Length: 304
Length: 199
Image (tube, rainbow over the protein chains, first blue to last red):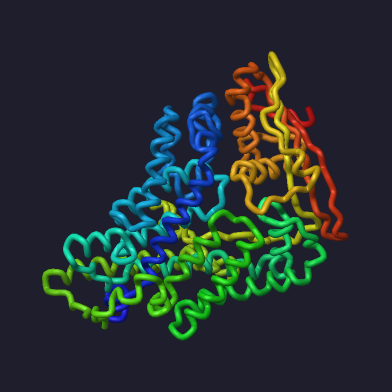
């Protein structure tokens, strides 16, 4: 009981939290800005999977993103202008969260609007389903405590820094969720034929639904088999190595390297950036001291 | 410094701790490798945890590139030409040139990728099965995209009554590394919820 209590509540100074907040905001901003030319097509009433189709074909089972069924509200919106307004609000919330302006309120608005928009197009990558809970943890944590306009305004107005040591339960939930994510994704691969035969990376990079480059990947299949087996070992190992203090930082670094390599080869939406950002939660606080503005942020604060 | 809870805050702290512990356990339970171990009790715990998380809209994790089966051939690229026919004939979408010239873009248009991901599987399924119920999950995108194209402003202006989609599928044969093309097509009467293969 006491161990659990310390795990969830013992105050922690973790400067990576502010970088994670800015990165999550930037991920949302980049993803939704990419959709700017297609807002009405993807989310509008006359668009794909839109309200007009639902009304023309009431018996057709309009698909909704799995797990986000409660948030499928855009199907009730008949005004394209309202869609544009909500989309603009989402972008504004993402900018504010990135900059740490009214951080918690901006985060809540971003979370709510993301869930509504992400529920509408099930064809997008699965990362949108994980982004909601990950963002929620950052909203619950005092992620605007430094490296933010909120912190800058606090110094300007009151001459005092916001406290940076915090009760880390939201960060702990994020860590548990990341481990659950790797367990879900990775362990079943030991019963998956293409993974065991070292073929999965070839499937991913040669298929231009994901792969970014037109190379002769068939000729590289030996190398890609090694890459497949590295991922096959590393990701399940993460479920065992991330919880251990001794190994967590190196495991997180190896996983970040893996995700960045995948990003260079394949377009999987924001999956890789999302996981890289979430993995920062496993790195030590002092590794973030090099970030401008964070080196001296907590030098006077006592943390047990 | 870590403050011990006071007598007034202790009950709240206890309840919060209980909630956090339960939520963490449910997350981990939903991620149990039950199928791998082949344990029925574990599978039941995993299923129950999955339902509980689904009820509150939380995804514990996803199988990305599940790779369940080893394949003889894989999808490389699919491109589409969508033509509306009615009072006039209007091209509503066309990226066939990308497949003919094998142009792969490192940074891609999200709509094109969404369309390729959604429609390529539907066309392959129809090519193998010959026909299909458009309410089936794999064919739903065909219904949705065709309905969307039937009612775009350009289609409305041309009084489009039928939409036909021509797909050019490029695949990689994993036995010998050769690439091949499979042209596929079909059409839909905008007033009907059915798909006509090959017309």
